Length: 273
Image 1: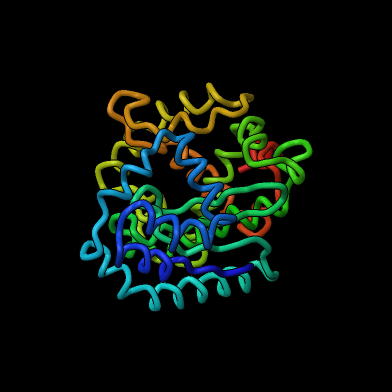
Image 2: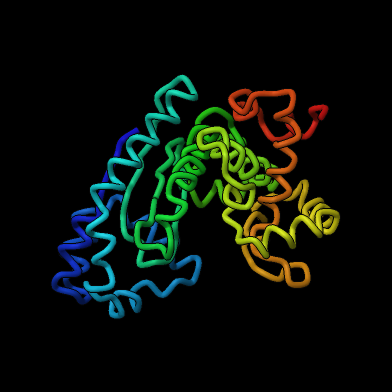
């Protein structure tokens, strides 16, 4: 896996500030990497150009001072995951600043995954290890199975439109359980990136979550639905992560996560618990 760190370029931009400096020192030298991400920002209706004008160097000092530490940490986690899986991973791992918009994002395009890890996302250092392992799981799984017909030659946009919801559901469940395998000993809520109240809500409303999730089984391109809060009452976002994780957790009583990561979602749903 190719490792790329764009934080130093972001620091060069922020020492000057403004959109022209953003383009000159951050975007233009790294256009191949940043263009797909900013394109997705626009799709998600994120006003990233406006965000540039609101940034200040002082608010990023902690990120810049921790860059070398987390650069080293990310590389160590990648090696740890590859050793656990027993193979080298393809793709790119990008440590960068995402204007505080995203923490982790594994983007698949024409058979290759690019992991974007946003160092400037609020409180990311508190769950950095789990997030890196989570995103690496997506990269590993995407390279092992063909989740859409012809996926390996599909553009990212085409794949998103054709992605079976069950692959998203199972993929997130596996990624959550994978991070637990790499870093055991944490609370379940930590692997799910939930706070205590969000986890309690899911625990209390498991049947309701199951009912809502099953409505999307058999659909494609619908995986963004549960990223919103309040899909069901006062539910937190990503309640389907919880459902997928609980399903995989039961299967792990008889199966290894390294076995499950290779199996398409239909096969996993058909397995006996």
